[in-house]
Image (cartoon, rainbow, N blue to C red):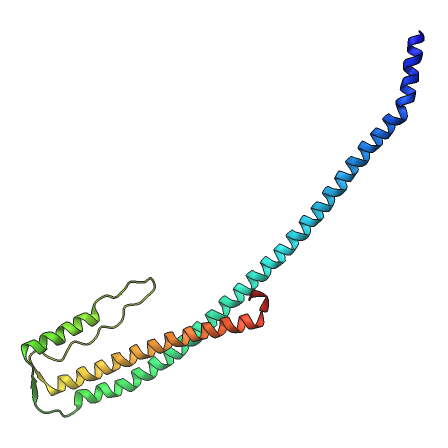
Length: 196
């Protein structure tokens, strides 16, 4: 019986230490929860900043795409206007070429005829393929064979001139489009210095 009295006394002696240890464990547990809450708040802040930055980049990208589309549409509009004007201008010239008074005939050597045929074939050979590219109108055949009339040569020259004008207008449209895109990009960069 004496032994149990001592064990109760020992328990009472260590009880404050046990309570303090439990309180310390509870404080550590609460501290860990507090730190985790802080980390989660930090993560939420970072996520919100990242999502805002992502939304800003998407909006900037979409605005750039719209400016590019507008630039392409403007270049296409100008090209179509030039095409209509060119077609009308050459329609008159073509009709005059058929009725122009031309006398005589031209005799080419067989070698000259082959050179002209080869040049026409080379100009009409398929180029590099690309998706969405329409077929270009063929280069006109050289007028006649070895013996041809002056009239055929006038018609051939008019067709060749029109093909050249069309190629020049397409080239200018490509240059204008590239310039518009470059201007659009540099205007966007100067308006939004954070992307630099």
